[in-house]
Length: 473
Image (cartoon, rainbow, N blue to C red; front, side, top):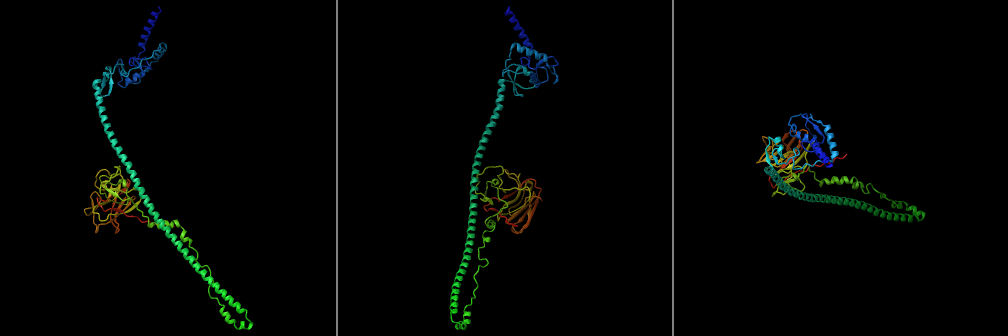
C-alpha cells in the first residue's frame, strides 16, 4: 500500500515538474514571465531569445518588448516545488545549445558560432556548415592571424636589436659628452690657474716693490740717524769750550748745525692696493674669462643629423662623413636627405646667427618647421616648410616655390640669418659686408628650427660665435 502511494506521489511530482519546466532551458522556472500568447519562460531565457528575434520561442507569435509580465503565481509554485522535493537542475553541458538544449552540430559562418539543428530557422539567411567542414574555416582564419603574429614577432625581434643598438649608442654619446665636458673644464681650469698665477705674481710684485721702497727709506733714515748723532756730538763738543772761543766760533758752528733733509714719513700709496687685488675678484675673474669662453647662439643637434654628416665635438661645425655613420634611426633624424637642425627650436622672439659657408659650391641655410619631412626626399621650398637660402651650380636662390634667383656681385662666404617670429620674417644677409640679400615672410604657427645643408663637401660649414656683452649697474 505504501509502495503504491510512493509510486503515485512520484508520478505526480514528475507531472508537476513538467508543468514547472521552462521550454527553453528545460529547468525549473527562474523568475518566470508571461507573454501575451500565454506562454511562460524564464526571464533570462526570454532575453536571450530576444537577441535573435522578437517572437515567442514556442508559438513564434510576434510581441513587443515590454509586453511580458512577471508570472508571480508560477514563481511561487516553483519555489514550493523546489523546497518540497530538494530538486536541483542538472547543469547544461557546454556542448549543448543553451536555447534548445540540443547538441551543437552545425557552424554559422556569419555569426561565427556553433548552433543546433533547431537553430537553423534562426539562421535561415546564413551559410551553415557541419562542424567537420566549419572547423577548417576557423583554422584557416586563425592561420592568417598566426602568420601576422609571426611577422610581428620577427618585427619585434628586429626592433629589440635596434633598441639594443640605441642603448649602446646612448652609452657612446655619454662617453663622448663626458670627454668633451672634462676637456672643456680642464681648459677652463688651466685658464683659471693661469689667471691665478698672474694675479699672485702681480700681488707679489707689488709687495716686493712696496717693501723695497720702505726698506730703502729705512736704510736712508738709519744713515740720517748716524749723521745726526755725529752732528750732535760736534755741537756738544763746541758747547764745552770757553766762552770767548764759543762766541767767536758761534756763527761757524751754527752754519755746520744745519739739517736740510726732509723728515722720513709714510707716503701716500706706500701700502698694498688690496682693493685692486681682491675687490670684486670673482667678477674680475669672470670678466677676464670672456677671452677663454665662446658663446654660440646656435649649436647643432646630432640626433637630427643625417648619417652622412660628421659633426665636431663642440657641435659648431658640420661636414661630409667619409662613410655612412652607424646611428639609430630615430624619428627626428634626416635620412636620406643630408640635413641637420639646430639643437634649439623657437616659438617666439628675435634670433640671429652667422654661418661660415666658405667657398663650398653647394649649401642650404635657413629655418624650417618642426614637422618638416625627415624620412623621405623633398624639394627645399617654403611650401614644404623650409625658408632658406640655397647655393647650387653657382646660382644663389631663395627657397620660394618659384626659386627666386638673387643677383650678387660677390658670392658671400658668411651668411647671417635674422629670425623675427613676432613679425613673421626670416631675412638673409651677407655677414661679411652686412648687405641685405632677401627677406621671406610667413605666419609661423609651428615650432621653428635652424636648418643646415652643407652638401657632401669635405670643407666644413661652421657656426660663428656671438658677441658677449657684460652690463653692470
